[in-house]
Length: 210
Image 1: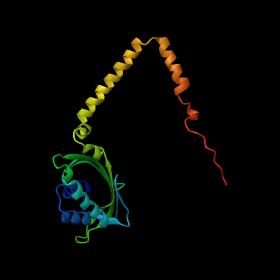
Image 2: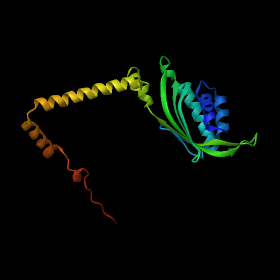
Image 3: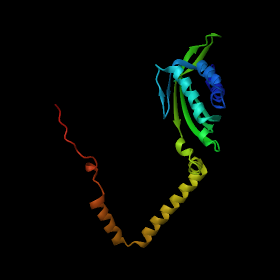
């Protein structure tokens, strides 16, 4: 990449918008270092395995999750630290759930390394380390109905607002109906029998140093 901010979108679309195995291989080979590292919530690739393992991993993921498209929300580039950050949504249609589309929300950090293009001789940047973070838990997103609710910001906000209103109603009712003496008695019971003193929250264990 000569200009990471301008080029990363095309690279991601090449990898995640209904790609072929050969297309993945060519893009990763061109844009990742031989000893690249990959960190993901479910799998890691160390520099010893490097690019070969990352290519295999991307191709395996294509077989399993069936990439359909990618939508990029934000791109931030720190030139001083040579780090590129991307927030995106990856659309997949797993073979076991072909009747539904799942939108995986990602935050990806790419640590870049300066390199030289062997063909043109130009200075370029290649990915040295890729770190993926899920904004939503994908396994829960895949569950019919529950996944749709979990993935919807509007529904999550609505459920949160209803829960908050219900909690405030219960608190208000408690304050209005329960006599002060009973409140004091309940608090005293909790303090004496249910609350764990700060100093006793962790059991002291005898440690013998030999």
